[in-house]
Length: 454
Image 1: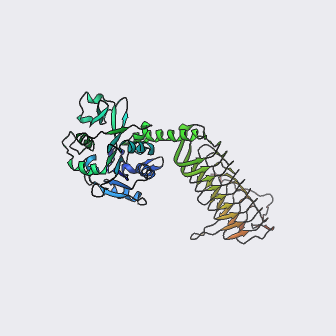
Image 2: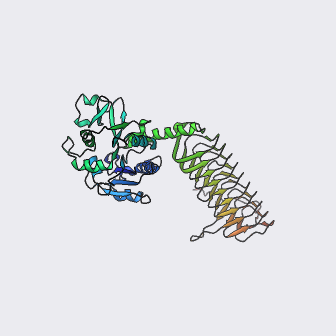
Image 3: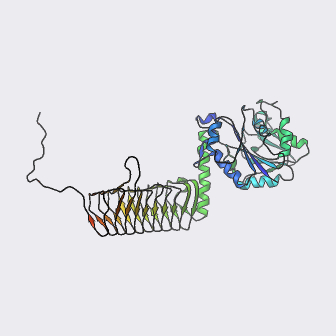
């Protein structure tokens, strides 16, 4: 049976106090709605239908790369109305998962359990039992079977004592949605069309309503304001940290670690406090990441040590390298094995060969550095003329003296030496010395200027 996913994402999110639509607010570096879409794709849904309203242009633009059917809910008349507007594009066969764009952490496992449980009945929902369900729609049961969902504002005092509530996540036969949704009424305290009313319709039709509970309570937590967003961020980060530690990653303090993407880690990886991992990253065996580092879309091979407060973006790092502290690898940086990149060294769109070193205050942009070369402190590759970028090539076993400027395009040969303080504008041959600086002179008994007396 094919599965459709319907995502409710039309809410304005007034309590966020933001110009950004609520479903675009970030959790773990990804929009709330992005998490839901990602889970829907893992379920191999035949179609994803997303209902938009406030800020619809922004929402559609943010997910223009996704294969989504967009349906507008021009008026906010309730959850039942929101799903009803999808009927013109919703298949009449199969089953639909109905999800919320501001409930980002629902898991594939829970949704699969829901689909399995509702296969025979044609309708099922995710519920959660808590100590205090104030504000939520209560699950009313008789002899263990669901009889109704009563919204908090419509519930009696006795019903408000019920601890099991409706999370708003459903699996429903498409045929039944086409049958039930046109019959919804807004005769209630809110004057809205409640999606929960389809439960009463199912029971009236003699159907048993299936239910499942999530393994983790935070899976069904929604986000309405900044406080809830921050609380859910920490819960989600704690969950991710626990998963990594169970895989063998040594997190010095999991409460001070953020994963905003995916991380594949080898054995005996050690990550210090306040490290942020973004995008898709991979750390080999015995990699150590110092405090305060930000690692984004980067592969780091086994045995590499990254000192504190280094920042990597879209880089590839070889085995047994030494990097930092305060180093920056920008997109296109490729470091071979046993390279040393030291404090306040920046590498952009450059390859650094086996065992080469740039230990202090250096910029290497659009460069190729061979094996075994040494780049002195204060060296820069002058790769930009104000309009175009040019390449610097440094051969194997070259020695670049401190405070040198290599004006690209230029080639420094194998075994060549550049004297400290030189500005190199022409190629340097293999095994030769290039020095370009003004001649030093001395003036004996030099008298420094004195301050004038007032």
